[in-house]
Image (cartoon, rainbow, N blue to C red; front, side, top):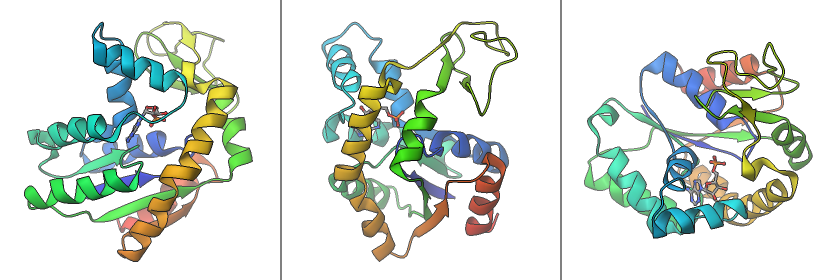
Length: 214
Ligand code: AMP
């Protein structure tokens, strides 16, 4: 299955995509994760990406499109993929159509997780991540056994730079301006599966499975 997970930051795209990875055995392609790796590099691109992300803005289309094109060409995408956080603009969506056409592939569905803005800030500000292994937590919804310590590897839990409140507000603003138009774009193509994201993690996952018939 070739899928896109669409929705505002904090809607639970990454969490739900991971659950579907386990079920379907297809890879999750998170441009956010790939870019977080890139920003660690001591290169002009690394520095540029770091600056843009710390302000909650979008990385230029051409950079992200190139990353996705390369990633979709890898053999593990043969059975399908879940794009998480891409496309985020109409030009990215159009570029994706071209890339998939060249690969003789088609999208099967776009899962849109809908969550209102006020709920997003509450969710994101409680998010923590292990600086060693990347495992994700939430101080209310998924707390670690010992505060500030990763259950899996004992690493230190930190807040992502771009999860700080001011940056989150900017990310939501950018989402509403640049990414929200994709809902209409994919609805017109008959691909959109709209999911109510204000429910427990398990219930949201059930809704997603039902909408995809898996
Ligand atoms: P995410 O983890 O998906 O919330 O992404 C974190 C940050 O990475 C975003 O705020 C952007 O700065 C950047 N980013 C991720 N995906 C994209 C994309 N498709 N286009 C542009 N920037 C992106």
